[in-house]
Each structure stands twice: as structure tokens, then as C-alpha cells.
Image 1 (cartoon, rainbow, N blue to C red):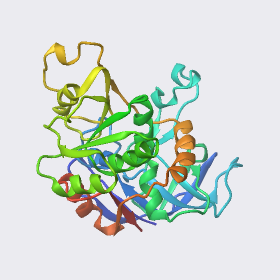
Image 2: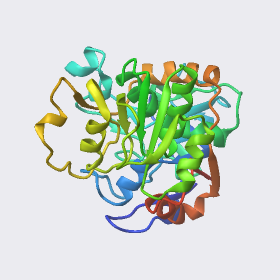
Image 3: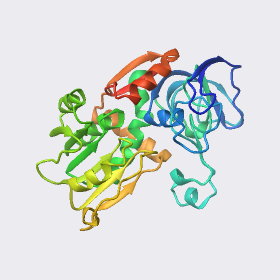
Image 4: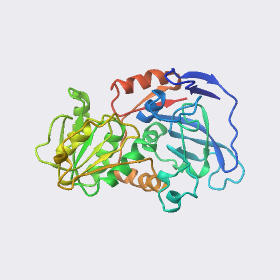
Length: 327
């Protein structure tokens, strides 16, 4: 197999030849057809997350075909098309797993972070954490749904019944969530980097009610806002934009420090909450909703060997929608 491997903190990914991995008990080996490039991959490559396992193969928006079964696998067959998400394993015995909050498991494994991921020709996954995808849709278009879509869905659910929804950071997750929210009959307000006309035009093409810079305010207060950009200064900006009793959802795994802000931005029962990971039920629910909502992902495909260039494009805001690597 071939893989783009991160050998050490701050290093570039290196293309390496490795022996084909063998699945253990309850595991499957997947031949990767497409792997989306997520901002979390950038946090891994830039060493912004703790306890990164080196060397590591990033990538957790994986679409591929099962090509080898480990012992005791009954849920999948060789040839099945599956999607492998960020959450790759949970212990099943901690209080969070037992109480239906496996996204907060005390001993989890994460694809492309604490176990090798999909920037490769093959990967091994726990069969319980591989979603059956069926045969509808192409691999490249589906790949971003495995994280940008899943985390986007969880954050949208946490935003409640907001009729006027703000989205801060209109990238892979933002453009998917905007489509679901519009399908649900909500009005969507897109906030981008100042001067990012391309992203604002993109948002308008997807039917948003308004698109502008993140330091602007909409003409009327929002019911809720979701922050996908990893910029802590957006928290007080979003709090300013929501109404009394409104909610701000921080949807990223990493964010720069939140600056101090006056208490009156939080007062009047505004809420500030975070999203952590996902559950398998989130995945099952979202993958049923996505075709009904008519989601069309905006993707640009690149060969696997260009992973470093793609990550730099993501880092510098040069991508519209989502990038996808193909081995």
C-alpha cells in the first residue's frame, strides 16, 4: 500500500510504501477510493491537537470498498462500499458510553489522529464504526459527508429550532449545513472572512438570505449561530449577533483562544455550547437525511500525492467547498 505519512510534528507528509495492513478481530480492511480533507486534518498536521500518534496517516472522511474481513465480522461483506468517520472506536464500558454519549468516551480512538486514516490506498477500521453507503452517489461527492456533514448535522441539531441561523466559516461543513437548513425551511446567514467575496457569492448561490463579513451584523438578531472557523474572536461576534435566549454553537475540535468580552453579551440567557465528535446514531440519522435534503457537495478532487499542497490551500483559504484526495 501507499500512504501519505506525517512522521513528526511540523513535518510535511511523506509518501511511503508500506505492507498491506491486516485486519484484526472485528476489523475490516478498506481499499480507499476517496478521502476528504478536513480542517481537523490540518490541526493534526500543524500539531494543534494533543497526544498525536507519530508516525500517523491523517484522513477521516473515507469512502472505499471492503477488501478483507477480520475474524468475527458479520456486518460487512467483501465489496461493500463503506464510509469511515472521525470516531473510530469507543470502549463501550465508561459512563458516557453506557449513557448513550459515546462521543464523549473516556478511551476513544480517532481515525487519522490516534489510528491511521485514509490518506492512503488502504486502511483498517473497526467494523462497528464503518457506515454502509449503498451504491447511490459518487465517492468524491460523498466523502465530505463523513465529517463535515456529520459534525455539521450534530451542530445543527444542537442549534435547536432556530428559524434565523448564522453560519460563521462557510467552508466544507458550512456549505453542507446551509443546504440542510434551507431544506428545513430556515433562513441562513453566512459569515466569512472579511473580503472573501468568492465565499460570499458561493453562499448566496446556495440560497442564503444574507452573506457578509464576520464582523458585520445581520439586519435582525439571529436565533442561533454555529461557528465552524477555528477563530476564538468569532465567539463574541456571534454572541452579539444572536437574540436574547439565543444559542452559539462552537463546532470545531480546536479553536484559538476566546478573547475576553463583556458579560452583557452572554446575559439574557444566551447560551454558548460546544460540539465534541459524533455518535454512530448521528451518522445513521444524517446519512438518511442527506439524500432527502438533496445535498450537493462542492468538491475539488486531487491526487493523493498532492496532499501537502491541498492542506496548504485549506490553511490559506484557497478552497471553495471541500477538497478530496483520490489514491
